[in-house]
Length: 226
Image 1: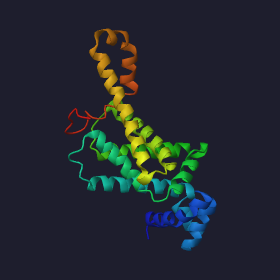
Image 2: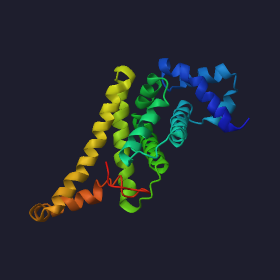
Image 3: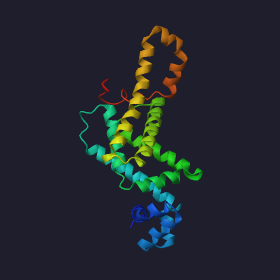
Image 4: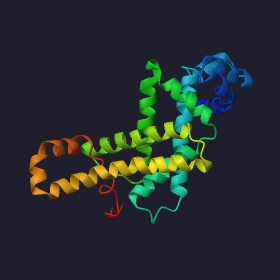
């Protein structure tokens, strides 16, 4: 049996324990015991114990999201709707909020904050790649940073959402994306005004370099509808 399959088995075994003991050594040891796996093999599969399993759990969710998105009928959707769908599908891969809540606590720790940031980046990257993103240079980075921020905020809201079918979360997601689109709309209006474009040349240049999402125009088949 491959190490990847062994790790997948460990992830499945640890999940029932995470809700009670978090992504901890205690949960890891219980999972190893449940599988009757030797400690030496467990250490080879997951050198950092539960942390490595938490990382694998997150990445498995990304894979499931991409598969679900690729299977969906997205031909009639604009880019904004496609991004919204992908984020929603990513959250819908999660069956137990407590597992994610415990993961958020784990990756908030200084020792593992870099792991958490990398995972959020990977999720945003998977979403844009699934959408067929062909951007480059600064825009490639800003689109992923912006989406990563939207995704993180939406996850935190979703963790506390008790509305039917998570309706409040999807409304929250729509508002976050709307905020991003408004940045682009505001910049467009300013640039069309000779007075404003002259007075705000510096701030607009900075926004173009740092915050410029350009979510639509770098994708195949772009049309300027939102």
